[in-house]
Length: 306
Image 1 (spheres, one colour):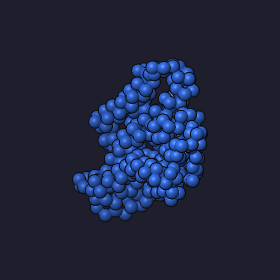
Image 2 (image 1 turned 135 degrees about the horizontal axis):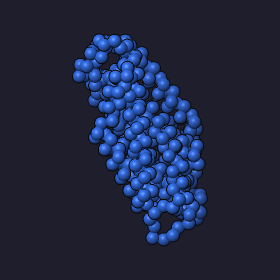
Image 3 (image 1 turned 90 degrees about the vertical axis):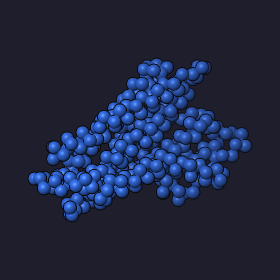
């Protein structure tokens, strides 16, 4: 099991993958650093909130979004399917290792690698942001306060997605067959529902059908992200609801934006709280699904024909 753990850890921490997460962290940090410079001198709270919104978006969509979730999808979907396709799974089974020990060693090795990559990417982002940005000590402390929240969110979504990838990997005979559904989840959590939701909201004058909340992966992942940030101070927002960044924060705050701009009190009346699904309920559902997927994977691998 130790050999399998080390081998999977090495495969997860490939040079190209390490370089990719470092570059992604640097780019995200550089963009955030540039956003910290302002020609005017804004109020401290407004400036901090704007920087926090940018940072949350960078983590949700880039660092713990496209980069982390794609890596998790790629590694988890190939744990068993890759071995079966290459014919090396028979060799592993022939050695004095139980099938469950093989799968556990691979899962633990994958998890160790994913956690290292996530810490590395977030650390590079923060270091770049603080070293290259116009950020004083007080703001730096407020920005760094969310590091544990980002780690917790990364653990939760990686746990669910990796469990789904591992399950498919134990069923499929080719890695690509297991990888595609995982990538569809990544796209669903980060892209397509946003376009659909905004289109529907505009067409309905700011209303969003309740049934959409049940199938909107982006909404679900956003609720989990918001729950994690609530543990460390909550997501801040600006007072101007017309700003594009604030409109995107709608994804995290579960807020519906009323598109009727004829109202006089646009900065307060535009936002209607939408708590259709409790954050904790969504979190529990995805954690339970992750546990079920892993247990099912252990059961399937134990009875898999090779």
